[in-house]
Image (cartoon, rainbow, N blue to C red; front, side, top):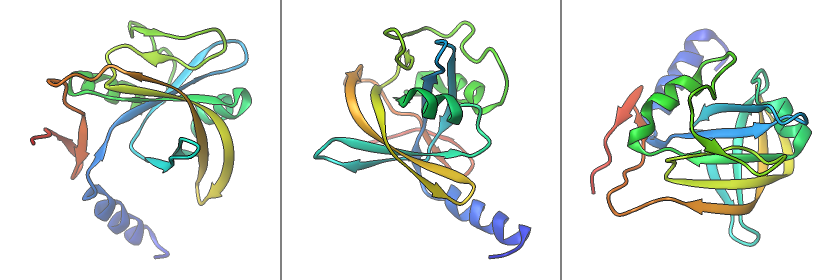
Length: 163
């Protein structure tokens, strides 16, 4: 896999792996919020509770995340599909009009998320054009209910979860 064609094949193959959609948030040392849409999220460990996120080296969110050593994984519900698109793009003002809360110097927790995991950075590893950031779970905010469905991404688009 050495050329652009191979990258396109790999991207297409990866799109066939259904995944939940989340917005990873953080703040810089001045308290300015940053965030990006992400499906490269995975559970890592039960003892201690850890998750990992894979963040593009060129992401505006990576430097503040590593600076403050904290981030929040906000798992999106189907009602938050528009937020997914908003945070997937580069640029300022991603948080304008978005309802969220945070303790001082802590990452934003997005209102309406299915569940939110506030993490401290435990380890960072190189992973090609990404950094693999391992986070120790410090707090869980569970906003789920029996009628709340997760936002799912599959085959290049959003899909509805049915049980």
